[in-house]
Image 1 (cartoon, rainbow, N blue to C red):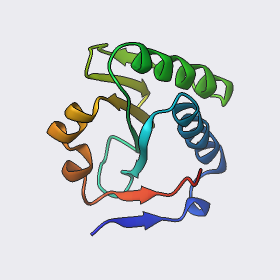
Image 2 (cartoon, rainbow, N blue to C red; image 1 turned 90 degrees about the horizontal axis):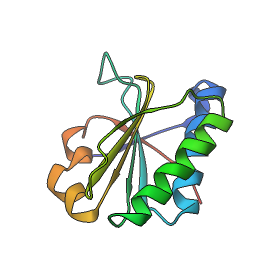
Image 3 (spheres, rainbow, N blue to C red; image 1 turned 180 degrees about the horizontal axis):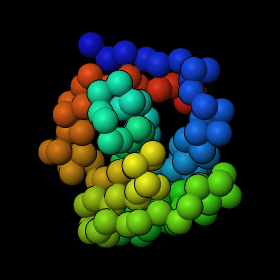
Length: 125
């Protein structure tokens, strides 16, 4: 069962940064943008943002917009793993990790299933 966490219990700065990332992904038409609160289930990671995009140009457009908006929200320049045509990872330290994936990669790797004990945060559009 998926739990939803209340965004009011999170540090306001982190909440603003997560909201900026979610908005930036949606602004470039990423789909199924999900934020997982890992603070109760991981000792090394805090938040995952997972989003679906098509390969190539859209993955790049989404990651560039996220990088820009996140830095404007006070996050440092992320480290980037990949890029590949299926999955791109932006790590803003251990605090926020963004996974941009094609639909096929997202279904195959099933990060939401792997982290099923994490709370899902709600960021309405």
